[in-house]
Length: 481
Image (cartoon, rainbow, N blue to C red):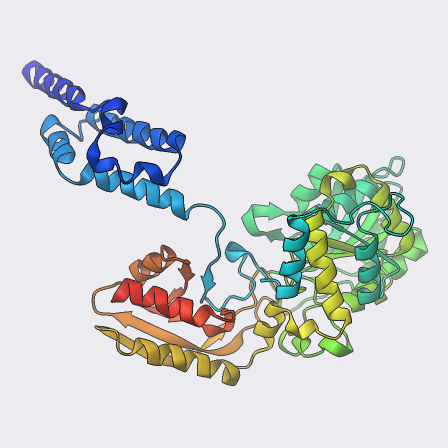
């Protein structure tokens, strides 16, 4: 045993001696083409990481002098560093082709913006802009005056304010109503204590905001009498939360926002309704609600009489990421006065995108918003796109392609249980497993994201933007040709 341990120690020493230095790698001619593709600091980091990784393998007994010599003499050194350089080039936020059929895909940036909204954002991003100054008087004003006015017109509320996402909107709401003497309790139905993406829970938001959660009712049934019985001297706010990413069915009962608003007025307590996704509606945008089931409408929530309604700007509304709060003038003014608002407020770029998106709605052009157009597209409207893609792929070697009836989803927790009929392209390959093919497409330029389902790759045209068909086909040909 002692001889064996000594031999292993000697073998490790031999391997450690063979490890190249950073200086040697910097002058290795085989790496000359890779180094200029990244900054010097990044390149040095890759070299150090490679040496440390090999050092760890030697220490663990997984790499000896013979194996290391083979790596250095062969292509392993260049291959590992090339992969590192390529990963660096693929890192960060880049445009992708979304062929999953999930319209509001959180992992892919949720709602794509209308071209005019994107243009408005680009224009102010690369220049100075009118932000906190009045053009007429030259005096300082509030950066979101125009945005608030557009929200008021769109939703029918008395006033509006916007922060950087809906979780921030709820946080600002709770934090604002905390400072009411000894009042620190917020009453919420037990069945509405939802968890959204990333294990982010409503009770956690409440805790961080400094309020005490008071649960009422049961998971499946809550009545207005439960709210009334729980309200007391410490009650700060009566709150309703839309269970936007799940449904409880069967023996159920919930408090309506109108009932909550009436109780709030009776008890002189503020009321709020967190809608989550937030479905905008009106005479000029009436087509989308037809496919969204019982998803609550923003205007209906405002008309119920609750003091504050909050919802997301980057989900069903179809704008950039934001959290909108609309409602009674006094309630919105209190939110604006909270010092926390300054930490959560929007930058000029997001404001520009939201303003233009709201203007599109108010001009009767809401159905041009890309996510809305995708959500309202019928299966018959999508079938020609699926057939074009299938026809273009039919000649690829060793591929089997078919157009099949399928279902798309709104995504991002909007309208759970709602599935939209579509036609998808089902693709299988003699050599590629579906998961491996999907991974290769994600590494394409631009990356393509598709569904892997029933041992096949599915391409759903519902979530394709203009021009995406060509990019999708180019990526598939590059991988499968």
